[in-house]
Amino acid sequence: MPELSDSDGILGQFNVLMRELLQGGAARSNFRPWEIAILLDIESSNLSGSAMRQVLQEYQNAVCAELQKGAQLPLRLAEYLEHREASRKVRTRAQGNA
Image (cartoon, rainbow, N blue to C red; front, side, top):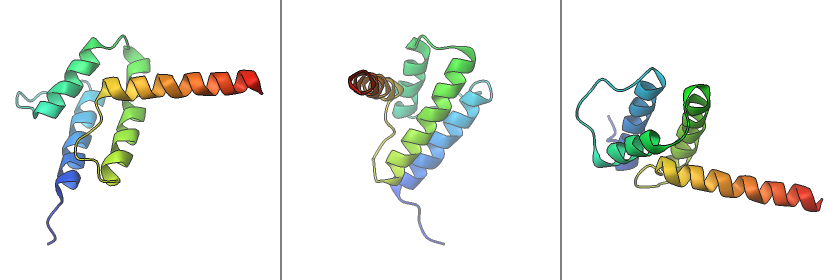
């Protein structure tokens, strides 16, 4: 059986964390440092309910794509939200100039 690369292992762990969060919260007490950073970002975000669920699903897709491209660790949620907002502003400006 082939060994998983570090990014494959992290991708699996990230998907477990996202599945736990999307199903109502993680019931475990041990987390890796990067998981704690993500949990803190989620806690400090102003999102809740269905908006949070939608953002987490989009975030999961973005992180999976980055990890499959070879990223070492998942992008933090705060970084994803900043990138998402910047992209939205660029699209809005481009539409205004069209």
